[in-house]
Image 1 (spheres, rainbow, N blue to C red):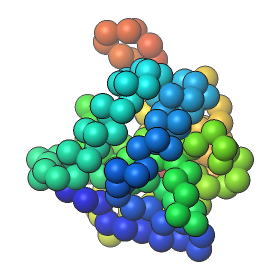
Image 2 (image 1 turned 90 degrees about the vertical axis):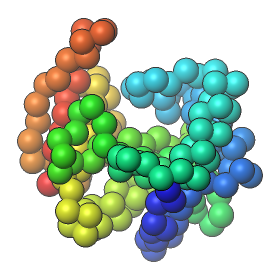
Image 3 (image 1 turned 60 degrees about the vertical axis):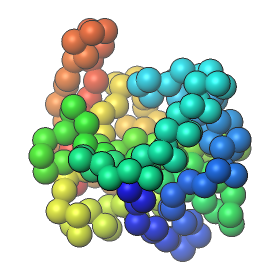
Image 4 (image 1 turned 30 degrees about the vertical axis):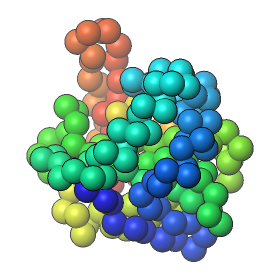
Length: 169
């Protein structure tokens, strides 16, 4: 299912299309972009398969909430954002996942995109959460701008790693 198209003063959050594949892969194999993302492979062929899977998700009706946007500025893909139900979410929550293209960092793109999502939050009648590595200081700082209402620790049963589940205000 396609996510709704959202706009800010300078950004458009919209579904990916096939021409976005190469820029998506540049972003998803960049170590800094994905170092804290679960299931990130850093492998070109695997990320190409993931991009094709995103396009397949658009073409099917999902039983769970699963929206995936490319973040565009002046028709240039500069970021990725997901809003979905996961194993970490309660029935009234959606988890946010995001990354920024290496050439687009430190330009306020994700701050603006997250502000747009925050404005829509009440329409969706869902709380937004983020699952973050305690070492991901950049993401934690960004999410503090949104406002963190609740913080709890969760552990991955397979790896034993501890993460922060942040409920955003």
